[in-house]
Length: 406
Image (cartoon, rainbow, N blue to C red; front, side, top):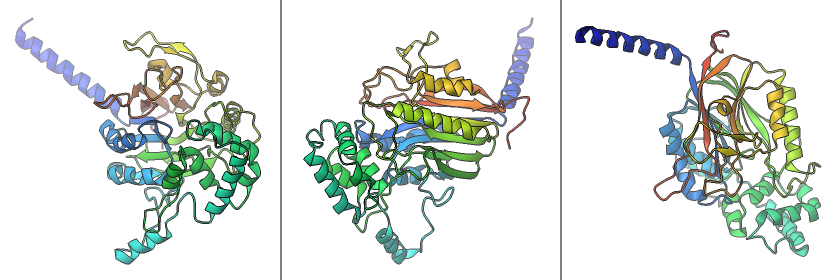
C-alpha cells in the first residue's frame, strides 16, 4: 500500500468516525448530581462555597441536580455567577423557573423596599419563642456539649422539648436553619437572621437546586410529607426538561445516630427513608419514563476492579432501601460503568466507610447512558476537596427504540 493511499484511508476513517461521533452525540445531555455539602458541620464551608460556581461552569454539564445548598445567602451568589450559562434554574424558594424572587421596582427605592421586606429563616417574632425552647433545653442538660456535638444536643432538644418545637409560635424554617447551621449560637444567629438592609436570607428547606442549559418547560417541588413541618425537609423537584423529559431531583434521608424529627414518629432516619422511597415509587407509577438523580443515601456493597485508584472497596448503606429502587425497574448506569464510592473514606472531609450513594437512575427505556463516571473529585492546591461528596455525571442519549423525549 502506498503512503498516499494509506493517508487517504486514514482521512476517510477519521471522517467516518467523526460522523459517527456526531450522530452519537446528537440529542444527548450531560446530567450531574452533586451534593455540595454547604453546611457548617462539613469543614471549610465558606471556602468551598466560593469555589462551587466556577467548578460547575468548568464542568459545563447540561443539567445539574444539586443538594445541600440550604441558604439563600449561598444560592444567590451561585445563581449570580452561573445564570447566564444556566438560565433555567429552580428551587423551592424560586418565584418561577429562572427567577429567584418576584420582579422588584427599579432604582434606589426599589432596592430599599426589597431589602426592608426581605425574609430570613428566623424572624424577630421567632426569637423569644426560640430562646424559651433553649431555656427548656438547658434545663434538661441538652446544651452541655452543644459545641462539640451539636447533633446530640439537637436530639436531646427534640426529645425533651418537643412541645416547644411543635408550637405554632416557632417557624419550621427557623428550627431547621438552627439545627442545620448552628454549630454555635453565633453561627446560628449569623446564618439564620438578617438585619434590615441585608439581602434575603431565607432557608432553602430541602437544599435542592436544579440548573439547566436546556429549556425547563415546567418545574415544581413536592414534599414526601406534605402538611408536616420537618427538621430536614425531604422531597423532590420534578421538572420537564427539553431533550430529557421528566427529571426528578431528590435527596433522601441519611441514616444517623440520632433522630431529629419532632413531627414524625419513625424510629430512625433509615425507616423514614424507606417511607420516602415507597412514596416515590407510588408517584412514579403515574410518571412517564424519567431520570431520577440525587443523593439517595443508600447503596449496595461492591468491589471495583476496573480502576487504578484506592476507592475500590465500597460498603453498603441501607441496601434494602436501594434494592427497592432496583426491584421497581430503575437501571443504574453509574454502578455498571464506574461504581466508585461517592462518599469516600479517602476524602479528608469524611470519616465514614466508603459508600456509593449518589446516583443517576433511569426508568422506562427512553434514554440510554453513553457514559457514566465520577466527577468533581479533585482537590484545590491545599488539598481541600469541593465537598464531602463527589459528583456523578451521565451522558444520556435517546434510545434507538424510543426516539427523542418530548
